[in-house]
Image (cartoon, rainbow, N blue to C red; front, side):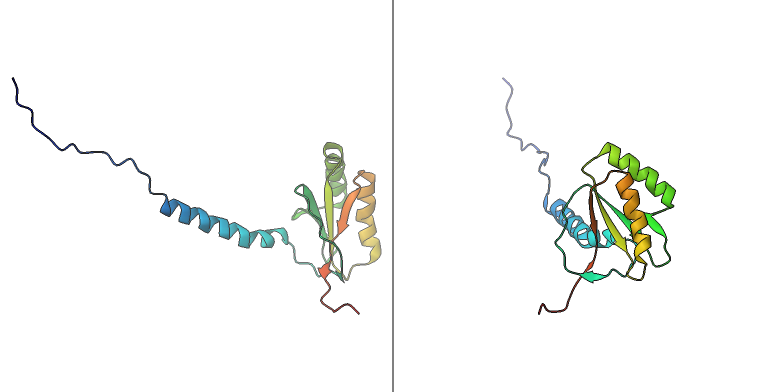
Length: 139
């Protein structure tokens, strides 16, 4: 009969160290939380001041008119004709789409009305005019 020897077998370590993975995930999450408001405010515009409630929607588009009367749809420059065609498609595909209009406070009222007319023609009824928070105390 053969003699049996007690050997210590080498085990493979199959544990995954989650500490560094959790640290990395937390760091990425904090980075997105800090940078998201900066991404949303892409084009610098001096917004008029006013008091309004916050509009919350996951599926929203932003139209920006800067002080040089340039149009932007979701931070991409567009002409009025391109804006009209794109909004027609958006209005047809998603009737509950929300559009936020950001216009420089130095623009004339007529330039904002042109964009509102395009929204009306595209049958987009849910829209909001974006303003800065009024920092003056209420009287």
